[in-house]
Image 1 (cartoon, rainbow, N blue to C red):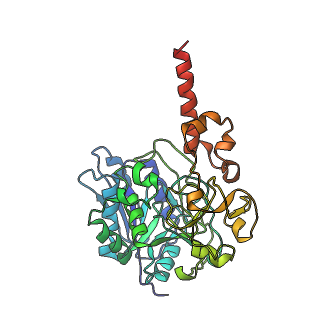
Image 2: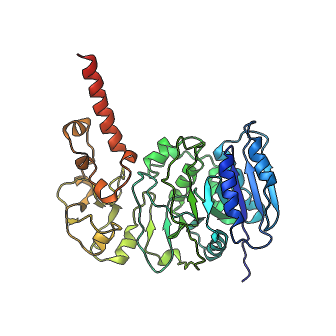
Image 3: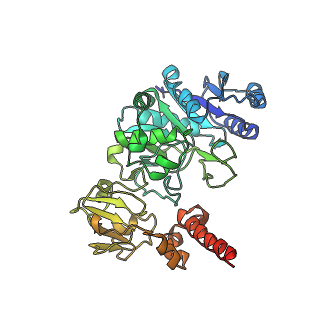
Length: 397
């Protein structure tokens, strides 16, 4: 098969020698076609010559290797943007930060995905990573399965991603207009206000929300993440580790318009896609907020797990993924269809924290999603509240 795209592999490195050695070792075991170019792009802080030496000494057996050791300190955002700009020279790129590890079959998957979605105006990029949690709140995420091996999210991938020239140019043209993303209230709060200025991803996030575009994600990941300590990581974590494709499976793709597993910026399934899977809610103009974390609503009705008054319909939160409770009409009192004015946002006040002794009451989703409890914002609020009270009692003795 003749491929239109022969993406250049770009390793983004800085000062992590161990990380660079590890990802290069995984590349050495991969199945890349002859004449595949490898670029190792290294940000320069004046003390990371060891990283440049590792890159220079690495033997790339599949084609040309180029090491770019930048003269000045770029920072992560500018560095990624420069790497993305390589699409203008090579037509397509695969961007891999140095703390990733690739499946041996990552290149074949990426080529096939780039070819399949080449003309789709809805697709802003190809993810090599299967995202197992929601970006906005770090709760576990499981997509609904359909006849393909992919799903779609209005969330940019940063743990292994590919762009064609056309996909990248759409973003870059938007970015060069200096958009004020703090005004995009559809961008999740954590990305809008908490992510650092060094984040390129929050800009791409805002771009795909504003232009109604999506990333293609694989059900079986082609990369995994070691979360090594670095610019955005202050401690090691296993949170980014996922199963990677170890055998050569020919992934089946599907057109965006035909897919049912399409998710918004909060990892919530689109209402029109949910309606394709069941008829229960077809008569309502509604938004989906099953995780219960959205900040604002524009439709008359909301499908939510937030506490509310006067629900029209109620569903259990038992089957997984949680959309199945609506698809199979599992009646209960955990997920509700309700008018937006009848939603009670939670937690409502510090008094709620003070008067609630049970963590399970404060985070009812915990026992269902079994997330790392230390990743939940509400737990830190509880701990801060109780610790402050203990300190006050100590000094008031």
